[in-house]
Image (cartoon, rainbow, N blue to C red; front, top):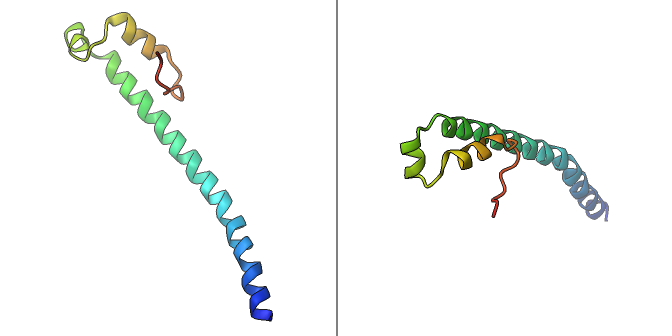
Length: 77
């Protein structure tokens, strides 16, 4: 009977211990995503008109993208 109590008690402790680690990994992923957005938007800023046309953007569209916050990665209509 004590083995049943011990195994039942250890599972929630493992879940509680894993939650902060998962949250930390989540924040690291968000930070990495924001840094990637900043880099790709910086590359976008360096494109000339010819290359912007190749990817289907005008200069005003590219500039609007550059003004967005790094965490603002949702598609806009």
